[in-house]
Image (cartoon, rainbow, N blue to C red; front, side, top):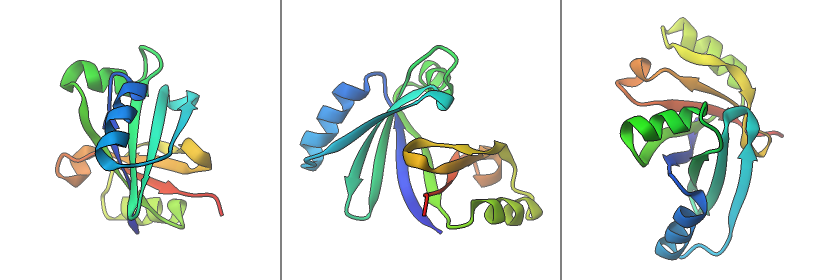
Length: 131
């Protein structure tokens, strides 16, 4: 496993993307809307990973709830695996709890989230990229 991205909840993904682009000296940023998660994302590619800025697209989005409760900031870390279903099974056998099933994420990935209670208060995402 390796770190895939760090996700940050923001109120305005376009404005935040401009700030990050300027601060980090990044030329290109990819934008995508993930309807199933209720978010618009800006993906910033760095040499050793990505930063994903997330803005809610509706009032039922988990990111909307996060922003209302905590404000803008770090939302989760994402860990990449080649075998997401195998990792879920392995982790569940160790007592790790998940928030839902494996489902589609951005850029064709498969994702699921590890309950923060299982990782000392940190929300983590498992993701698997298409081959």
